[in-house]
Amino acid sequence: MVTKQHAFVKMLTKKIQATVLNDIWPETMFFTLIAVMLGLVVSFRTSSAYDKFSEGRKLWTSINLVSRNLAHVIWVHILNERKVKKWPNDEHAINTPADGRSALMLKTVIEKKSMINLVQAFSVAVKHALRGEAGIFYEDLYPLVCFLPKYISEPPMIDHKADVLPLWQANVLDIPVEDGGLANLGSASGQTISRTMSSPGDEKEKDIAAERVAGGDLVKELANVKHHRNRRDQEHILPVVACDRPLKPARNPPKTTLYDYIPIFLIFKPFIWLVRYLYRKIRSDKYGGLRPGHDHARDTLGRKRKAAVVESSVPLEITLFLSSYLAWLMQNDYINATFASTFSSAIISLQDAMANLDRIRGTPIPFAYQAHLRISMWLYLFFLPFEIYSSFGYLTIPATAFGSFLLLGFMEIGQEIEDPFGYDSNDLNLDEFCAVIQRELAEITAHAPPDPRSFLFESRNHPFAPADVRSAKEMIENVEHEYHGPETGLLSIRRTLLGSYRATALHRV
Image 1: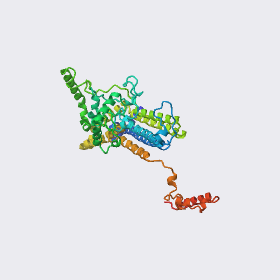
Image 2 (image 1 turned 90 degrees about the vertical axis):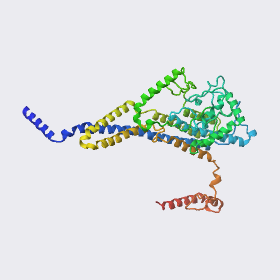
Image 3 (image 1 turned 30 degrees about the vertical axis):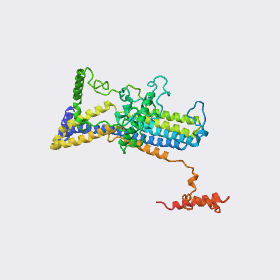
Image 4 (image 1 turned 60 degrees about the horizontal axis):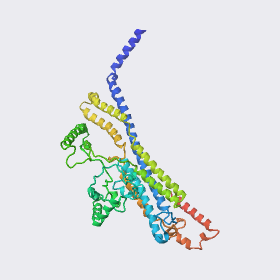
């Protein structure tokens, strides 16, 4: 029995050796299966990244929609005509007989338009926050929020630096200011100037601003700033607002270096960093710790020092001001309870969208997963030419290059769109999203809510067509028509509308 089994195994082995299975099983086992597994893993990696890309686009659509709805409520459903309540110690209250209705309406429109500007500022602040750009000192953001309170009390009670609200604190390098140096802050950047007396600031800054206005320098710098702006930028339509520090541009993409064009040079980057570090250290020792003309603006490695300030969430601060505005409207009965609920729901939706966008940005693919995938991919591509050389011959090089292009291409695509809020070519165009919101909010505020009776009963309105092609004005003036009859009026109107339905149903596409 054992002899028969041994003979069967020996015969089966010879049969297998006579086939091609003995020749192709290494390729099938180690390369085909591994290629399938790597393909599935890369596909999962790319699909996970695209899910983030797609969800980010949906959330920005939500911000656009909620911003429009919130602007509708503020502009249309908060009336311009109000019954003013005089509160004790209220210096901003309006005395209607003295100021007149026009002054009251003007202040109300300014109030509503300013809050809609805050709604626009929310999307801009979200854009900068997602790109890791802290603070409000940007050309497209600062003009929208510069009127907000700067201190916890006006004027500051103790130390104006200690009373600065988080919104006005930015993670930027403090500019060294010498005696009278505040007057030169604008010329240091070429884009901003010292703040005017109407802007938040302490007394020293206001005195300096007053001197500059008297000398005419402020007006000249305002003209230069407006002249040098690019007309294609969305921020060119924003007002040129004075500021006590340089404003950064709306877009701050990283500088393109040689490593972006030839990534293989990254292997030399640690050596270059070491050489620069030793060079700076030698120069520092030579000049006693500091080079001539240098200060403590850079650390030992030559990197710019950043101011040690408290970080703040600018979008959150903006929603807090919107919420306080809603509370003030409800306290004074300036808004209906239904629209107050819509107002509150819109603020919650904005906060929810910001939280989800921050979740997408702050949840990358785990490093262990990425490292293991890349190591496996490069090992597979390294051994691939040795395995296919016997079959492809001199075509091994282009075949390996083509396979590397496919696998590495999909992997890099997933890496690039994993964080879709940056400045890469395939990232979401956040600047365009903010520009769309800006245009739509401007369109809303350009609409003056008229009395519907002023345009509904005109001669150009034909409400009952096609059954009755007369205009609304003709139907109202023709009192002899059956529409005006006490018994036939409603019935005849319904009969006309039914005729319009039948005429419409006959013209199906």
